[in-house]
Length: 436
Picture 1: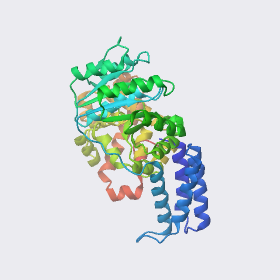
Picture 2: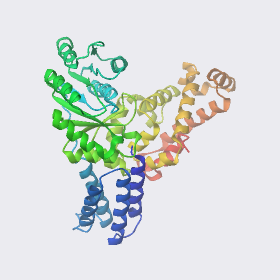
Picture 3: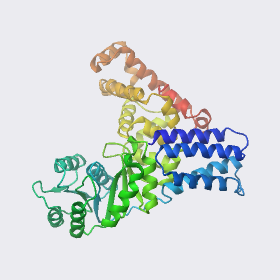
Picture 4: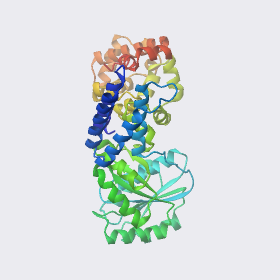
């Protein structure tokens, strides 16, 4: 997530954290590093200099009780970045509603509609997707396929060219807690698009009118947000493609400047890659601080909790190990998991692609074992190792590597305590998993 910006900000903070004392020269140097990072992320120059002045002014104010000057400066940087990136966490109401998504071509509206439906589905609600994009070829098929993938109702009329008619008919026929309408886009917000989306909204009477903006447009998000708000009265914004551009900082700050609240961000291509936009957590992750709440929320839907407890206690079988590998893979790229743990720096030093391939290889090996072997690895003799290697298309050394790592992790988990883990550091833990 905004890797270049994050790396530069983390280096600037680390530089201050390593110093014994903090004086005016140190703060000036920190501010210059932050300026370079934000301008490279396409944040408005005027906003960057306003932020810089606030950091300089607050750096030497009276120290809050219990903080050193160095800790105070780092806290000020955190608080001021939060202020320019949104200030407040959005409120999500889990109640019956009608949601209209608007945006131009290329914003990722259709895939975002499915991600939003999946978000409410995981909250225990029953969403439905309504396809009203009559301008883009294949939009109907794309939304229909996405609805099937996440098992939610879909309504659309492939040959109907009037979007308002589709909405009118959908309201008569579709029953759901949350109706999510994917509207048409254009290359620009012209009179035709304004007229169409206003007619759709009159039929729908949407509770939420959300603008979908791609992060790669940077500061231009300001003009888009203002234009759509004038035409439709947007209530919130979803910023997409935040994982794939260096200009995301510009898009986020530009939306905030217009008064439009960013409600969600997308950080990948799967239906699971939608997150509530919490500026405090977002800045924490940019600065390399852990977002444990987000990690636990993600883990809750993918990991077997009882098996995770067995692994943490060191009393687990290869079957439990297999289950957790599957769960970790469902959580998304390893680099993203490390980022949420505040270990993005380790991820940048480690080739996470290699580690993901290793986990995939282990999964194939585990699938080639019998249920008895996975329940009791002590049964795995040399002849069984040959059979497992042959059945998985891997080498015998790969099987031995898996067994060695399994035994190492069991021994480590039996010995380790939370205090010891804190002393040895997370990097040591990852080494135990063969991630060197």
